[in-house]
Length: 640
Image (cartoon, rainbow, N blue to C red; front, side, top):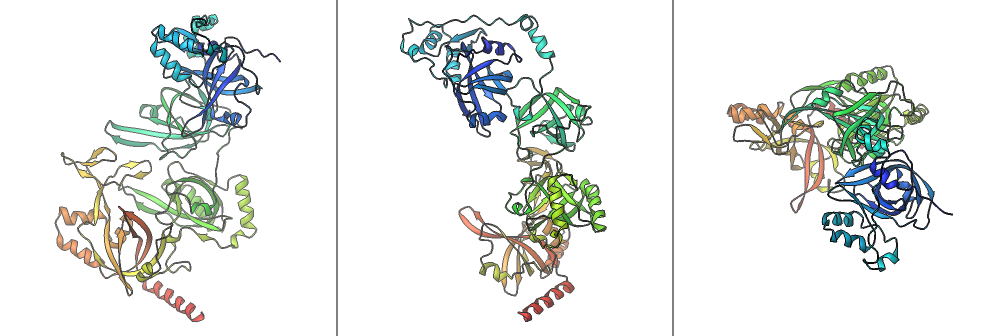
């Protein structure tokens, strides 16, 4: 069956055409990309060829064989972008006309010379030789590098001499009057076509997306070597399920911060795409949009039901136990306990609120969820009121952060969203399970180190048992409670000076040093500041009736032991030189009995492998509660 490709389609696309829906042939397909799979195509209109990039949402067309070498396709949606002085067609949508057929015509490669004049070269040796004879060496090298993957379409041509087959010079494409006389003006004034978020890539010159804001971050201020600034971000979700983060800086913040509302649908265009910073961006997209002064953000007044309100990727609680520290996950569970909100002094000296919840699901596991800041008074207060009347609500958590410092737990960050009793299939299934008997099924907590004193699941050990049982030498750390006295504290290095700056939702905390102008300097943040933070980092010996061992204590447990911030102790020793008061505080801690919650894990120090014991929590022994624990232990011993 004869096949007719659209004449001069390549030239028309290069000139700005985006509406003709031409029929072209695929001459070559190549897989490229490191972080994300992408396919590069070589397209032909039977006379000319051009490189093209396939949008990632069309990758399955190649993987399933619907598009392969020599396929004839029709371009439905496409644009032409200039990348490193080369034009590339970005295919956003297409249809396969013929899965496979013979090569049509004798297509030649289009190359733009340094002077901007458009020329064609054949795929044989004659085209390269002619370019060399004309002295256009840069165009020759560019053409060879860009189109080296195009196969020789005519073996007969490659076998003949250059003299017999001079390069064919194709007349330059003459665009319609609209393109020629008003090309630049009409191109800028014509509204950009709306494309899926999944099709966004840096190769596009003009684009627009229509999406719903699923989360809006807080306005944050920062200070670096270029001065002070402000930034905020928001997340988008479109009707195809594509997600992407948008970030605004400084003057752009002034334009869009008040305009953006979570849950609303917007049309956004004229932004730049840069690689996503995965340390702060949990969305499954390799790109991130940065809005500029020329960007447009238009509210869509009519609700678009095709765009979901939110998109979840729930993980069972039992899987969180193996999740990486600081990873971002979605989780859904039944709220079984709600603790009161308590004030907490943050590491940067500011006060915030903290509230701890307990979640359980059908996996037989439960986990602690820590709410921070405004979450405590908004959703946290609502959950507490429901718990007080005896109702256990379903809670869906979008973008919770995993922590393993105090056992496996999760906490809120600025981009977290909480949904109480959401209208979803997962919530309905969980509710039915809980009401039909799930509430009576015991769940094992994976937040083991946070269990209260005297809990039946508490793992009590002696100092001797830590070494005798080889604790900490498995892949996962061991969490135990030891009742012991502090017998010695190293006072020469009990704390360090730390960076107080915030990196996203966390404080830097890297050690800082004095610069020549007596300011504190952080090598990690590359900034200087007047005041630093002071954090405990001390080595101590603890001892019980079976032996003694060294432990490492950090900020929170250090404050529990000394009863004062690290800065106060630092000032006593180094600034005020009050050795009497300093020594008194140290002596008050010695030979005092504590319940130490310990994290025991084998780590490498250079080439040497050692077991490190870290104090997660230190509580002075409550003799009344400890007596009840011992009596209960004796009762169990007699029964056994």
